[in-house]
Image 1 (cartoon, one colour):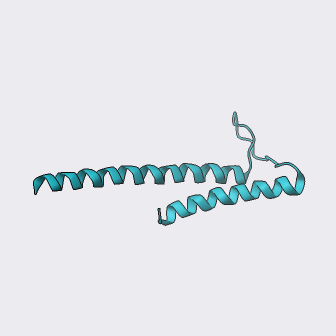
Image 2: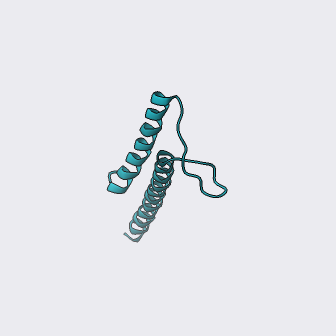
Image 3: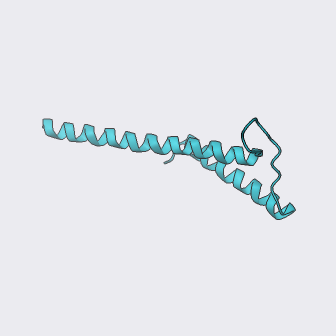
Length: 81
């Protein structure tokens, strides 16, 4: 995968992981400071990891389904010839 969206998603995941690692090494714990309703508390790095993972999964699904379509088109074209 060589598109900008997948690179941004992986960068988001890596950035969130590094952010949490820095907190863990510096303070010994990660501060979760955002509380929304019934969700457990989280921080910006957690959000970055989650959003990056969801976007990257979408990129992978797109890649899989586009490859399947390409394979089907190739088989159909070879059967016509």
